[in-house]
Length: 143
Image (spheres, rainbow, N blue to C red):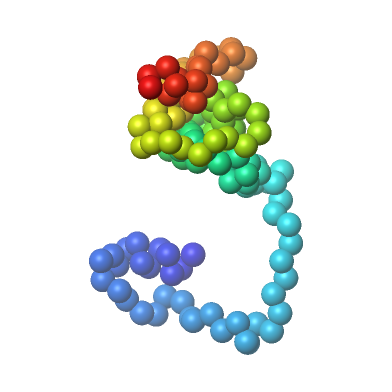
């Protein structure tokens, strides 16, 4: 973390010295293991977004940004951010792969719906059911 912190503090200047260059030959061996999805649940959700396609990326990104904003405003705990993004995907997408986005307007509508979903989820009790129509259905209504 020394390099990213130095870059952030020195921006826009480029300073040398916070960390050494990574020499992969000197390391000799790298070990890769499957990600711990119990510890990092957003990884599994992100993989679902990639597999699903369509407006899933717009929904995931907007829900994440909205959840982070709620955290920064001290409305939710940090650990709720990934679950809100997953809840938004569950509520706004149908099952399985999604058709490709047809327009920028469709992506922006999915973004707006995800933000509304998270705002409503933050305000309602944890046991209340979401009341948001699917992004693709809403976009079809406005076409």
